[in-house]
Length: 335
Image 1 (cartoon, rainbow, N blue to C red):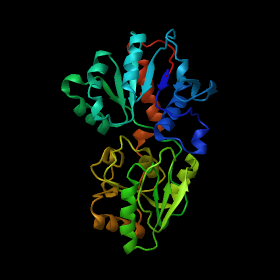
Image 2 (tube, helix red, strand yellow):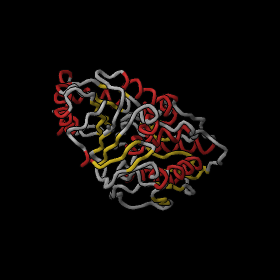
Image 3 (cartoon, helix red, strand yellow):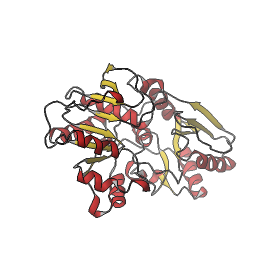
Image 4 (cartoon, rainbow, N blue to C red):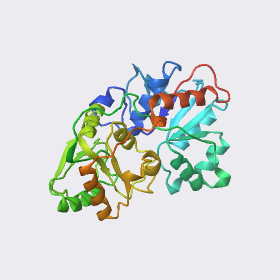
């Protein structure tokens, strides 16, 4: 059972093509779909109003959770208190907390609670796992495993021509867009033909301050439309210095289709997901950002996907985890 107590509304595979879906929800759907031939999956979602049979499993309302159900394993998205509450109902069931965020200061008790409840935390990067262990302290670290967020296996470069004057920001605006606007405005003083296209999934309103000239808002895009925007852009422009990603799926997707990304070095999982140092800069140094963009306009770098992020590899990692979990029974439900 996969339990998502965080979703604002129910979600399903068609939402990948209509836009507005967050990265966590998209990842859950892709992993559940990849696992469905091997496991029987039930996915409980906060905000869902009706049951539906999907390629990602049985989709049900969070209110449908029943104490009498006996899942082979439980996977809880982000909410550690929900995971520990479910442990009381299911004392012998393997339970995993699939963590896509960095916990805030008010969650310092989570380590001891998860350890006492024998709940394994699944982090989406080694960077996140190290940060979590340091946050919790040596005595209160529960078992931690790392399984990356997945890239579609069919994402590869194609012959789409790149526009050397076109930059792309493809994240929610709370992920540093105000700073990106400032960085872009500084770039335009030297390269006035530059444009910045902004693909905002639309699930969170955020004050980004004044919008510079040259910014084009694309709105909420389907996954396919976003990938087409990546193929056209000179780069994914993301040198903001404040929002730390636990993974950063759009960074990996851009590289998978041959598009370089410009990220701030040393922030969150940037260095792990964007292993090529040539794609990392000091986002506080406008001269360094300008130099990198000018160099790429002359000769774009050759970039590629990390094979460890491919969906096939990620699905295998989940299969190994679930099939070897202590007490695992033949069928799996996801909450």
